[in-house]
Image (tube, rainbow, N blue to C red; front, side, top):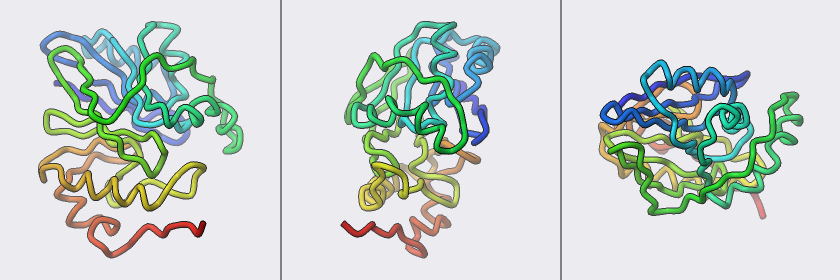
Length: 215
């Protein structure tokens, strides 16, 4: 298995190229910008892109999809609860002074318990809402692609539209049940491990907590 992280766009979102080194099949995870660069990266690793997998639909995670689709027409996988964020991604970007190309509609719906395959590799889909209502983590082969749910030393924002601090707390507790040596590939910043975050992340150790918004 080959995993290549490529920070893209003005927010330096981590897009991932995941390649089965046995079959050469590849997927792009969260292609947030610079779609042409991501396709070239997959090709340089010997990969043939078969799909786009999205952990969630915030604009910095979907801004490169349209460019990718013009080169390789592969299915986009998204949890349906994030469809409102996805459909409004280009408009939402303008609120931050950014411009992205609105991505085309997703073709496949993700759900808790799904198993996604690329070559011989299989990844379980966990629904881990909080940062976004349809946020998922993709877990298998000792790694977890967690999007913006968990970061090295921090966690995802809960002050954005449709975010939910209580739900994110539950999602973080669930991620903590993964084995200690699980490599965590995050949506921004460096990779980490479950053991490291359980020991030192203030939101997991109890030193800090997410505050629920008043109703």
